[in-house]
Length: 115
Image 1 (cartoon, rainbow, N blue to C red):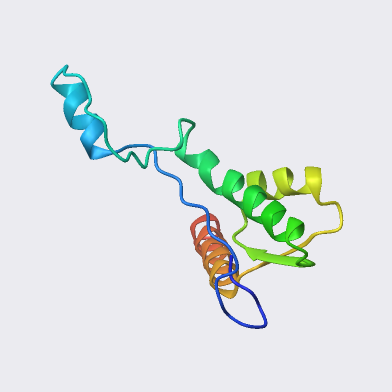
Image 2 (cartoon, rainbow, N blue to C red):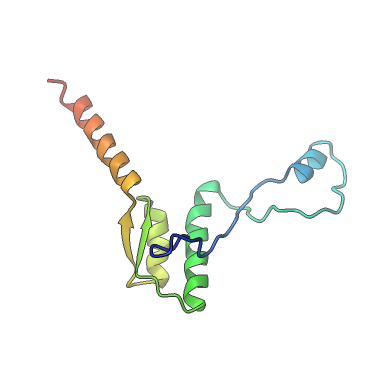
């Protein structure tokens, strides 16, 4: 998460489904040696973003930071999960996502109305 006023990173939350050391030894049916494993996610890849958004929002709220508006892509899963805990949190689309959605709707209109 990046602050709108400062433009600095406020919080981050990495997620990883695989780790090459584990994968290598599991494919060879060997005992995985002790290592510093960065694998910390077992769910679907689609569920990573909403989980990270909720975790980071809670972290910032717990540290005393006020979050009024979240600028993000148009992901309904993230929005619905954030609305469970944060009723008053506003959401706006980023300029890039707004432009992509507009372009996509123009292309769909072009396909539907050939003339």
